[in-house]
Length: 145
Image 1 (tube, rainbow, N blue to C red):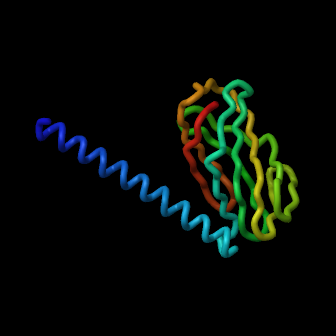
Image 2: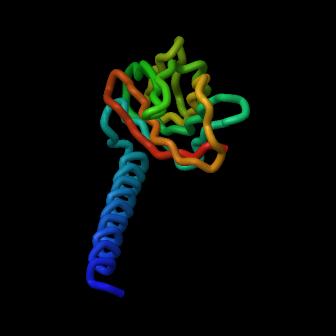
């Protein structure tokens, strides 16, 4: 292996390790925020089982929302493809009420956020998704099915 190829491989490896470390730290911090109930008011954690239904043209986000007060999901963006609004929010567990795109959270809530999509998505492809709320922007990489 020439030294140029070795250097490129080493840089790519270090970059990959740094990305994996960041994801791991984010996951651990999110876990402890949920367990201890001390998350930032209105924090959203996007679970890895979230996906884009390429046949039905829906974005399905499985999320945990923590905090107290109204969390308003303003819009959802599939980076580089489209920006859309939330079609529905369905709470799976936890105490909350839903009014349009607003979720009144008291503690931790597990929910599904559904957004209708117009673009074409290739199954197996990863897309970066951003969720814009009144408490901040949350991002995750999800896969189209």
